[in-house]
Length: 143
Ligand code: NI
View (cartoon, rainbow, N blue to C red):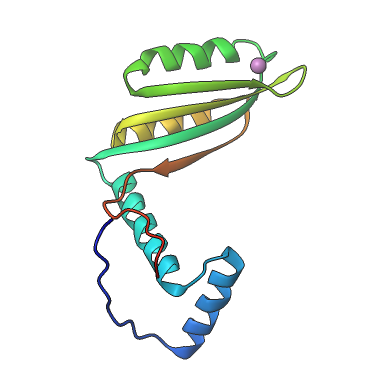
């Protein structure tokens, strides 16, 4: 397990009160764990925004498979990007609608561009991207 270092943080009391409410709503057991998660999230987000560096992302798309040409287009696009697609999950939501979750891994600029292209396709009813990664510090169970 990684060695934990302690440091002091000073902040205005009003900000600290809001932060304590936030960590209670989120279910954190203490401030340290909440601050560690915020740091990890900032590091992953920065990697996502940079041009270089590897990122991992899950793109979720809901679409109507009866819409002419749409399912074929999604398949074509994914074949063109086969080298950054780790896995695809397809769920038939009802008679017409499908959910596709596409896990991407690769250079941040390429992954971002591909995810944006998928979400912008006409006929995609709803979608979103979760960008993730492996920040250097592992999760710990102590405060
Ligand atoms: Ni389907």
